[in-house]
Structure formats: structure tokens, C-alpha cells
Image (cartoon, rainbow, N blue to C red; front, side, top):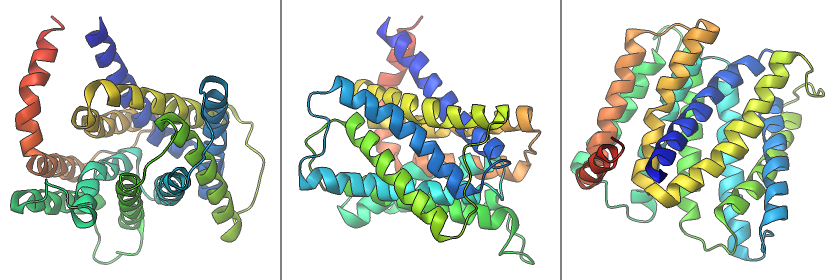
Length: 308
């Protein structure tokens, strides 16, 4: 029964994170991008911090490590990353944004190798990183006559956000915390949301109350409650049960969900170049993680076989 539950949770997580890119596209019709990102984490932090305060014995940050972890996660993975993601998605489709975001495991391995000495980045692993960024280049569909506009600038902004996530994730490995991963995520969302509000004010976005139109309300609640608070609870549950390698595979299911949902719900185009870029990114991931794949494939096959 637990194996079936893991499969259901894995695909639920893929649906929630894949759907988030579509929800961002919907909400951008009603909000300036940074304010929209800030409202997402206002809602998410309200849900997750309330849950932590009600259910955990030691929910408050108490040590310098706790504060450093909130800084890495809230400052980089939440604030910088999502600011660039929401601004960048003004120029891209849901599918292109999600495919670019699938660089996260690859960028994290590269940053870890440079910062703390990751073991994956030998010559073939480095080739995998290069291939992944080549794939993103194809997804960006660069126009030599207009490199400062269109999809190219959107993919460029989202890629910088991906690097921010990678630096934040590796930074977390360098500090010790006294509270749970869920508590850390809740406080990071609160801190990151406040920072994004500051960014929104700083760049002069018009400030407004949350929109009341049904699509805007639905998109914001989906982002804040389902794809943030609920999805991260699922993520940490699966991380404990499956391990880092298997949970990273969700990064390559999410773009499929986002691309199909964007095409069906928003009539977004899907080009052959976009699909080719995604496949090259997957090949890059396979090269980078080939040792982990060789170790994990037999276990994955036995797990799948156990379902039938």
C-alpha cells in the first residue's frame, strides 16, 4: 500500500508543480509580476507557518544556523528565484518556463562541485552540464536580431533564478538547523515574500489589493496553497521515503505537465525546437547522474514491479 501511496504522491507533486507555471501565466493578466509573486508567498507562508506553529514542538528559529538557512532559502530560493521566474514568464509560455526550470538539479550539482566539492562533476558530468545549457539555448529560440527581447530574455531571467536556487540549496548544506524542513520552508516563505514585496515597491510597481476575478482568485490560491504549502509537504514526505535522486526525477515530469496543461488550457504553442531542447537537458542530466542512475535503476524497477 505504501508503494502505491508514493507513486500517487509523486504524480500529485508533479501535477501541482507543473500546474504552477500555468497558474502564473493566468495571474499575470491581473497583477504586476513581483506583486503577484509576493502574494503567492503571503498565502503560502500563512498556511505553512500556521501549520508549523500548531503542530511542532520547536517551530521557531533559535540559532544562527536557523537564520542562515532562512536567509539562503528565503532570500535566494524564494525571493530572487521567484522574482525572476514571475518576471521572466511574461515573455515565455508555461512549457518553456518549466523546461528551463528543469535545470535546477543540474545547476545544483555544478554549484556543489564548485563550492563544496560535489562528486558528480567529472569530465562526463561536466559535458552533461554543458549539454543541459545547450538544451536551454534551444528552448530559448534566440533571435540574433532581437537577443534583448522575446523568449530569449524570459529564459535568461529564469535561468538566473535557477542559479539562485542552486546557490541557496548548496548553501543550506553548509549550515546546521534546529528545526524541521517544513518549519524552515514556512519561515523562508515568509521572509522571501516580504523581500519580494520590497522588490515590488522598489521598482515602482503599482500596488493593489488581491484581484477578485474568479481566474485570479483561483490562480493565487492554487499557487499559494496547493503548489506551495501542500506541494512542499508532499516533497519532504517523499524525500524522506524515496531519497534525493528519485525525488529529483520530478523535475522532468513537471515540464511535461506544464507543457500539456499550457497547450490545452491556454492554447500555448509547442515547437519542435522546444521539445528538442528538453530532450537534450534530460540527456545532460543522465550524463551528470549516470552513476546514481546505475545504482538506482534496479531498485526503481523492483519498486515498480512490486506494484503489479
